Amino acid sequence: MTFDHPAMLLLLYALIPLLILMAVNYKIRFTRIYSVAAPLSTIFYDDVGKTRKKRSKRLPVRVELSLRYAASCLLFIIFYICLCLALAGPCFGVHFVRELRRGADVVLAFDLSRSMNVRDAAPLPPAAGRRQAAAGDTNGTAPAIRGELSSSRLERSIYTAKKLLEYLLPDRAAPQNIRFGAALGKGEAILAIPLTDDSEAVLALLDSLTSLAITSRGTNLEKILDAAAGAFQDNFPSARYVALFSDGEALSGSLQAALERLREQNITLFTVGSGSVYGAPVPEDASFETVNSSGKPPAAITSYLRQDVLSAAAERTGGTFIDGNTGAAAFLAGLINADGMTDGEWVFREESNAMWHIFTIVGLAAFILSKLCSLRFRGRRAGQ
Image: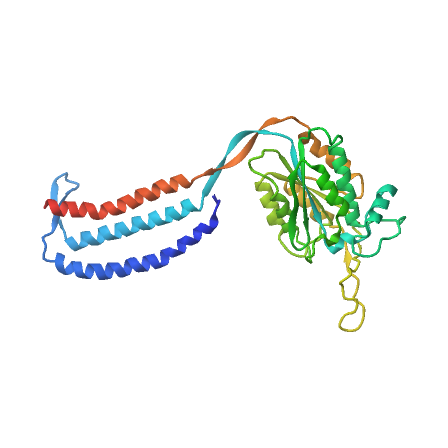
């Protein structure tokens, strides 16, 4: 069983003072009632024994009062528990809902941590390399002279994302069945561009994207994926994809928790890893201290492409890991094209069964019975 609003379960802690109040009320109330009820005559009720003969037994008034009060308190507690569970939105089991799925939604999620500035990715084509050099280097330093043997991981990721848009949107003037969004993150993450049909906005972001776009430190892949997942809309049925461009290194957060949330929302994760599994030194940024407390330059930090982490993350959601050092854009476009270029198809989506109404009915029945416990006793007394 799951809950849509689990925070409402905290109301159950109110049962502790409620039980104490009932116990105090019982002691004060029945101490007075016993003194009045003691002289009263007992009531009679019939009981059928094994001999099937009716026998008359006597039940003291104070005993019946105690039993009825205890039953009333128990039923009220059941009512309160059912009320808290109903407010929490319990869901149990699933059922299938038929819906028309149109196109695909793709969110490009970029890891902008310092390790993405490591220059151990496959070199860019000459034309792409010149365009990137004009925008300056991604770590805030002066533009480097091209013709090197490798590019930075972030440069390679941006190049792959641009090529992906070219493959999926060959004719940007025509109506498209694919929407794009973009999420950026380091230690914190933001949804930079919500899902939109305007591919030019996404391309403009890619043209100006550097590791300085986010000022926080560290790497938290959980927050990056959560920011990307926040772009999808429940009232817009479509195939949902997140393309994560990262080297797989994370300093904080729970990647597994984010993957479980993606699975619950039927979001498929594709991971695109750039860099080398052999690793390379992480370049220092402009604000990094060049001398430590001992007066010596700090040791260089080596970063590696964590292909195992990225591959396991993609497989967890039914996706695929793609090596960003090769022709990743064409392969990724082929996986998305099957859903993005279709006019629409009927699919069945799993939806949790809401059970709040059952707890509401049981709670109301318990509340009514708790009141009848005392009313019935009073009615019988009035009849006598």
